[in-house]
Amino acid sequence: MSRVLSGIGINRPAPGGLLWVFGIMLALAPVPLASNRVWVFAWLAIGLAALLVLALGLGLRGHQGRLTAPRLPGLPGGLLLLYAALLWLQTGVWGGEPLSVDTHHTWQALLQTVGYLSAFFLVMLRVQPGAGVRRVVRWLVLVGVFQALLACLLYSMQARYTLFYFDFDHSRRAFGTFTYHNSLANYLLMCIGLVIGLLMTGAGAARAPDTRHRWRRRLQGALGFALSSAMRWRLMLVVMVIALVLTRSRMGNVAFVAVLLLVLLPVLAWTRQLRAKGLLLLASIVLVDVLVLGQLVGLERVVDRLNQTAVEQPEGVHEESLDVRSGPAQQAWQMVQERPWLGRGAGTFYTSFPQYAGADLRQYYDHAHNDYVQFLVEVGWLGFGLLALLVLSTLWRLLAVLRRPHSAGDRGLAVGFLMALVAVLLQALVDFHFQIPANALLFVVVLALSWKLRLATPLVKNHYEPNHE
Image (tube, rainbow, N blue to C red; front, side, top):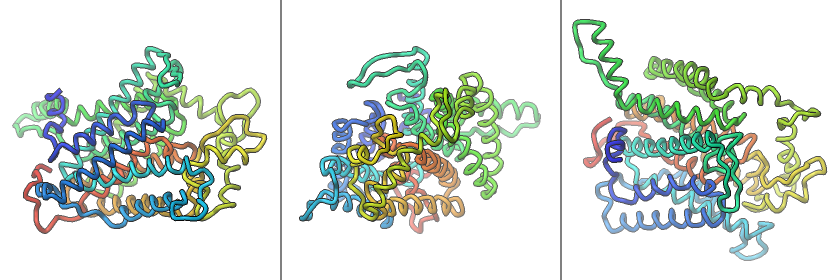
């Protein structure tokens, strides 16, 4: 195991053991039903909060001398704290009638938010810029590869079993330890963005020695790339793309193609330094991962699902139409109009939507299948605005890193982070991935890592920061 970690560049632990414990918690978050049970995420949130308290305690005692000074960006940290304060206000602890129509579920949502806050500030406090960020990204990619391999294995076995009172049937689609195939697709999309960011940094690419014979130099270059860590990351990307196709997720695969064409391609056209390497990587993803491997593992089934997706549900067609998928969000808009500013309470869509659902909705919906509408229902325009400012400010910072980074590695990671975040935002239009704790936690970690990328060369170099860009 140590040789494997050494080969991909995470053999050296980050300063202190807290970051390793944090990494293990991130790896375990998707395992028990994507932490989409109250008792699972309660323990996860308490553990993250305890780690944050311990990190702050060590900082106050002076044990953080070897780490980056805990300078938290005021904008994202302040927005997250204001959002948590809004949820606290909804519970009615400040006196008077509670703003939430179901304080029990709002307290649960507040506990989840405390977990996300703790994860964000742990990244800001304990992860060093540069090598520290890349180390965390490599670990997250390994977690995504594990989920992809497990999902492919269970799908190939057509496994059927019951876990935590949930019946799993992997005979039709791959969804791993998640309870919903679209949730796995969303998680893999974030990890795919991260590994593309690593490939864009060029870390581990071997340089061919300068020889007189051109054919020998090319052969040595090809062998050097085949044995380099870049090749290993490329194979991991292949594994995750295969698992993504096997989920048969319509929006997941559409979002993957969309971020390649609408994010990666314009970024490469805008950033001259990444253009040659990025265009080669983009071409290989489209030709090898999508066209060749996609056809081998059943990409045509995803295409068939897309072709059968209509605007309105026709007779005799089992694929859910756009009108049916958007039905809960459309009918939930009345809830937004009744309480537009502060919402009905975080986590209350589950209990309050049935009285607003029309007769044409034939099944029970515990989510709006549109994260934006669900946030408006639960936290109103005020809470939605805080979260929107957090995401938009992060995207703006990533664009700034692309223009003037401290290192080429930061620029490459900025591309990967941008792809991961945009993919999630696209899928949020038709699904509820922010309501899945494992997915939301990874999204928050990517947001925090985005703020650890450096915009300019520091005036005083950190003596304890490893110098290997």
